[in-house]
Each structure stands twice: as structure tokens, then as C-alpha cells.
Length: 182
Ligand code: IMP
Ligand code: MG
Picture 1 (cartoon, protein in one colour):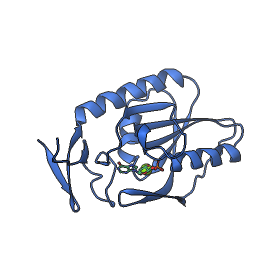
Picture 2: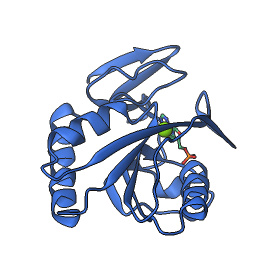
Picture 3: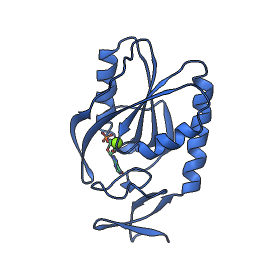
Picture 4: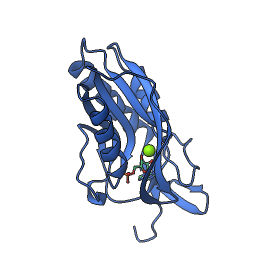
């Protein structure tokens, strides 16, 4: 079995580079259809989204703009539930088609607050949410994305942009916390 070491933890392969790239391409094709002629603004949530959004953009054939915000509510393997915006958005969202893009939805705290704030500030924006990964069983607030790459169980994952205490983002595949029982 392929395992990697990140910090003090061992992780095992969960989604291969091939699985991820096929799904990312399929998501881009859906967006190419849904957003034809709409020039959407993608807003990526840093840092975890950087690899996903770069790969996604390579498959977009529509006109699209890109912006980023930096949010964080996570320390170690736990969501603190407390949202910090560390880098703001310098775009006007009025009357725009907006696609908020994240790496993973876990408790739902981050995106539910961020999207509600965005909609309050820009009532005329048409906001949708895209996430590469979603852990539906980990939700603490009801929140679903409009576009989901993979639904996964409540396991901690790293790689493809996702970190464990800021490490492990560089791996081109996604790994889950190693468990001896499997
Ligand atoms: P939420 O607010 O609990 O939905 O968490 C959202 C953020 O927590 C994500 O954007 C990630 O940055 C981080 N996160 C949640 N689950 C994981 C995981 O399994 N691995 C790495 N980061 C995670
Ligand atoms: Mg994130």
C-alpha cells in the first residue's frame, strides 16, 4: 500500500492523481456548459484550493475571471468554528455570476458564513458553490455545494492542496489518515 508521512502522521492513498484529474476535467466540462456566455467570477478560498483551481482552469473554455480570499478556521485536524478573513476581495460582485470554490467542506462553518456574508454584501450576485471534496457526515451546519467533486466519509485527508498543519499540500494525489484496522 502506498503510504506517506506528513508531520507526525502516516497517510494512505485515497484518491489517485488519475481519479482526481478525470473528475476535475468532468467538473470543468459541466461548468463550460452551465456558464456559457456568462463570464463567471471564480472566487477561490486559499490556501487549500490552489491546486484544484489551477487544474480546473486549464479545462475551462468559457470566459472566466479569478479572485481569491484567504479564510481560516482550522488548527491541526480540528475546525475551530471561528472564521478569520486574512485576505480580502477586490472585485465588485454586483449582478455577476459568482462561483465560490473550496477544497473541502467539512463542518460547513467556513463556507456557510462566507457565502452568507457575500450574499448580504452583494444581493444581486448569483452565487454558486463548487468544492472538490465534501464530507456530508461531518456537517455541524446545514450547507451543500452546488457542484461536488467527491463525497467522502468523515476522514482527515491531505494532498492536492490540502494540509495537515500546513504540510502535505504538494502531493498530487489525496491521502487519508492511515488506519491499521483496514
Ligand atoms: P469547515 O469550515 O469545517 O467546512 O472546514 C473547511 C476548511 O477546513 C477546508 O476548507 C479545509 O481548509 C479544512 N479542512 C477540513 N477538512 C479537512 C481535511 O480532511 N484535511 C485538510 N483540511 C481540511
Ligand atoms: Mg480551505
